[in-house]
Image (cartoon, rainbow, N blue to C red; front, side, top):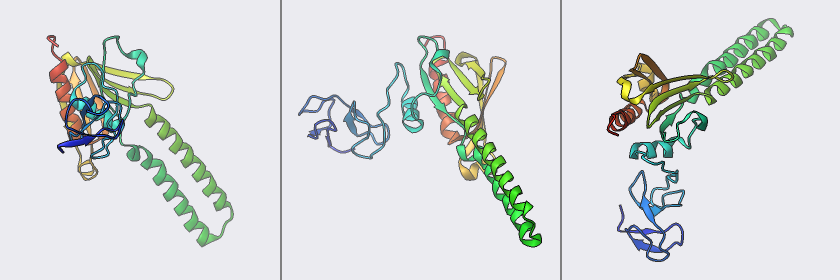
Length: 232
């Protein structure tokens, strides 16, 4: 951390403090490097990371970092209680969701073109178009399905929201969470994804193929430890 910082609002250089000495703008620390930045600044002047996400009441430092990484809330506001705060949200890895239809298109067209080059049947070219169309429809549906998956932890519960048309909500109160299991395959270890299983209250919620699973495992344990007791 530097001894001085440039105020993003007025551009004045001021010592590290709670307020800019030139314009009086309140300053706060960057979630990534710790540098002081203006409260309404979107980017840290030191490391350039985007950190200007609204801090909800009672939100943990880990949750603030998660919002900075994953973006604004994806949870439908209608399912939250009045005093419930979203602390962490994520989705499955996108490329894993889209990989099957992409492979289908590439392999299917590749096989048909190989057959066409050998037998020179024009009908095979129409089949290529059909495979491409079917693959693109599959790709679109896979993307829409991914867009409607939300894995979340709030100040009250752990949630899994899925479904494009019909919605499927699974939840487990934080006070009932007994175990958070982490499953990372060899393929997942090579590509940085894994699955978390939240067990408790007679329910088992799976967060499939999430990015950076060890960090998410740590964040969930922190949330359960802080908010999963009646005294909080």
